[in-house]
Length: 311
Ligand code: BDR
Ligand code: CA
Image (tube, helix red, strand yellow):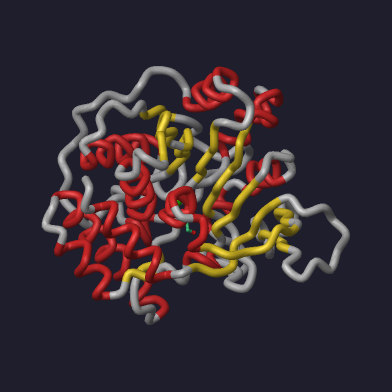
């Protein structure tokens, strides 16, 4: 199984991504979960990460708290999408499992240093603050990373928090810039892909029909999350952004994309946090990321439902 660290700001879609990973031990070995401030502040994201581990019945996964604010900006949150707790929808008990002692950034550094090069994958599902901080603090770990598979950015779909920027990149553009320039192999799940992973009514019903605690909780989470997309965009269902990352680790053939150059705007007020993706390769800037563009949505939801059934 592929060894991964999930770096996350749960978030209902983060929660589903984590459940998918924890339900797939044959393909994915979750070494730890590191929380970062994003959708909601850090005290909530670290707590939500533990709630999700308990929901999955996997209380032995260490959960660490990381950075509580972007590198050099004020935190922007997304309660308008995720609700006050970040995990609104189901009623889930407060976690019993403790937060693991130590800082998430040190866990990332120590884990990469403690494993052979090319054997640990980073899976960021929120702003890239923890990852960038780890790379700044310990530049030697960059070449040890097997791959960074992240949710963030957009090309055709442009932005969801500003007209030009996707939330995860916008919240900490300087961190994203450090990660994209790091030289580590990167796979990106941008809005172009995640806006194809829509939880339609039948797909939501399929989660609920599992009849298990995790199945029903996922149905309730995606119901809540959907409210925003329906009212705002008239969408047929909520986009399951972050689970694209963990689905990719299990079934990469569900996704197609291009290996291209991607740069992050950190200067302009108007387009701050935009991922400038050279999809048509009109520059000679070196490719630095596998930027996904399409997804087999039915295959994705079949996989997700089948795996959630195992929890
Ligand atoms: C991303 O922003 C967050 O609100 C979601 O959890 C996802 O990671 C989508 O833009
Ligand atoms: Ca997220």
